[in-house]
Length: 79
Image 1 (cartoon, helix red, strand yellow):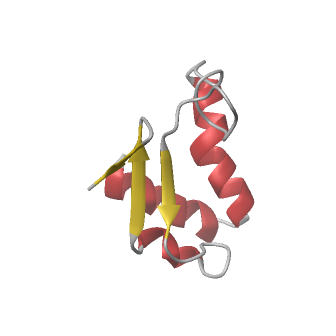
Image 2: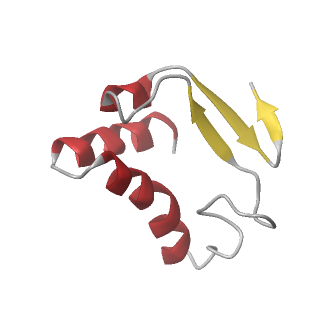
């Protein structure tokens, strides 16, 4: 996790994956591979409220993955 994961997201984009594909790989695909997609991986009623909110849109520039972000774990903002 952390900076290593964000670096992997950048590498995926540089390898030609779209931002949508990169986000799916980092969220839904990972939770499906771990067989926890019933609780994580998408934003749905009844799923865990673990989110990363990017302050700048990565769809505008993929390097925004490295920018300022807000992390929400179990429904609470983490500093």
